Length: 86
Image 1 (spheres, helix red, strand yellow):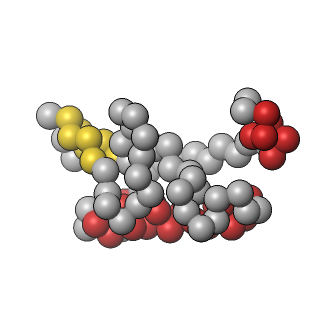
Image 2: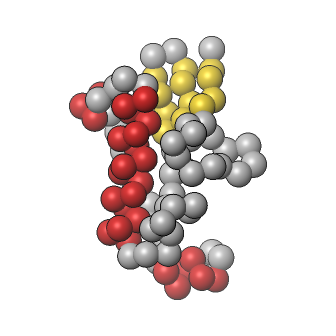
Image 3: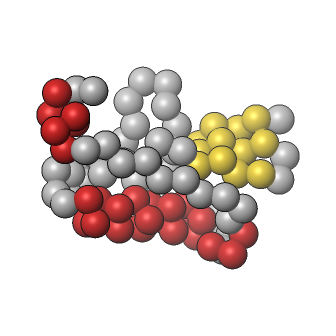
């Protein structure tokens, strides 16, 4: 069974997006950004730390630990592309 989850402690998502998806004993976390936080628009390091805090929050709420993570990927968009919307 697939369960889609949004967490009240994280910035509200738009549309059909969710913070995490559970399937059997796996938790998929994707699409986290600094949008809707006090660090939106700040430097890459600050925004990255915010996203890592969001991941930590999800893990804590699910009673998981960072050591339970199997894989993580981070994508950054250069500021000049973000301003142009691409």
